[in-house]
Structures are given as C-alpha cells and as structure tokens.
Image (tube, rainbow, N blue to C red; front, side):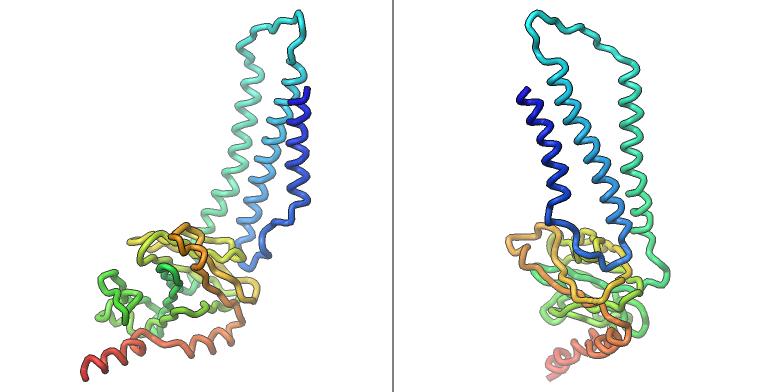
Amino acid sequence: MAIAIALILVVIGSVAFHFVSPWWWTPIASNWGYIDQTLIITFWITGAVFAAVVLFMAYCVIRFRHREGNRAAYEPENKRLEWWLAIGTGVGVAAMLAPGLVVWHRFVTVPADAATVEVVGQQWQWSYRLPGADGKLGATDIAHVTTENPLGIAPNDPHGQDDVIIQGDQLHLPIGKPVKLLLRSLDVLHNFYVPEFRAKMDMIPGVVTYYWLTPTRPGTFEALCAELCSTGHAFMRGGVIVEPDENYQAWLQQQKTFAQLQAPSRTQAKN
C-alpha cells in the first residue's frame, strides 16, 4: 500500500510542480509562436500519459496486491486490451508528430522576400556578414582565413567586396521583416540561439545551415551558443538588437565593407 501511495504522490507532485514552477519561457519576440504551441501540445500529451501510466501502476499495486490464500489467474491474452492500447498509442503518436511536421514545413520554407544575414561561429565569438549593394554574399573558403580576413571571404570574388562585416558587435535586425540566417562554423559545432526567437540550428564545420524568423518585438536580446563547443562554451555570448527600420538603416550605414577593411592591409603591403 505504501508503494501505491508513493506513486500517487509522484503524480500529484509532478502536476503541482508544473503549475507552481517559476521557470517558463522568456516572452517570445518572433513569429515562431508555432514552436511554443507544439511544445505545449507535446507536454500535455506526454504529461497525461505519464500520469495515466503511474496511476495505473498504483491501481495494479492495490488491486492485485498479495492476499493470503489467493492465487492469480493466468490470462496471457486480452485482445480487447491490446486493441485499445494499439489505437490509443497510435492516436497519441500522431497527435505529437502532426504539429511538429507542420511547424517543420514552415521552418524550412523561407519567404521569398527574406533578407540574408550570415552568422559565423568561432571559439568563442560571433561574427556577422550582410550582403552589400549587389544583394549577394561573396564566396568563402576556410583556406582564405587569416588575421586580416577572419571570415575567409574569397578576395577575388567581386560579390564579396561590398559585403558588410560585423565583428565583436551586436547584430541589428529591423522589426517586422523576415530574415534568413545562414550559419557557418570555422572550428567546432556551435548553435546560434536567441531564446526569445525560439528558432535555432546547429552550425556544422564545412556545411552552411540556416533558419529564418521575423522579429516581432523591439529590444536587445542575448545570443548564446546552444552546443557544448568547449570549456569556454558558457562565455560564447552575443547580442541582437531589434529596432525600427530607420534605426537599422542608420546603424547599417556606419558599418564597414570587406573592401574597406582590407584597404589598410593592402596599403601596408604596397609600402
């Protein structure tokens, strides 16, 4: 009996902890409310199943507890129970998979009018690259990475000369406009994650991954690495400022292009 009571208390405690817990998501600042909704649906389904299974175990402990002189009847097959379990499990799995598949389809379908921003991860810092006037990002290669060219932009690619380079600064984004984040790592596995945006994706060396979002709330948000990239993982922090378009354009005009950043080194090389 004590075990049955303990099982019931586990269910009651788990439900109570959920409702009184001080931990919850940060207020969302992007269009990915779908992700929150999917997590909530999954939570309630798995929570209900957890409670049902544990309470059923408590019931079995009470109902089929040992009684002096009683013997259990061996009935290894129960077609009705098996059908109910199969149907219930199928409905539960479908209910959890369907919302996730819908969200995933939206997640990988980038709007045609989305702006492009490249996020480059390197222990233990973030760098950013935006297309210049031509609207195209220049080619990159790890072989081009140097102290003067830390992002590895191909020097002979004309599309890369006007690329806007941002290092050691916060990334600015205009509010209400979709943006596609191209993710690239120069060393190990990273993950550019802003909790208020919800969306994230691994940055894999040698591969360009991506995700997109539409910032919906102005403010300054902390960016962090959501992968255990090294012993300095916790210090790999950055920031994103979401602001009106006129403020964004003013900030953008103050940034330097790849050609401008290379000019001093080229002048020194000639001298």
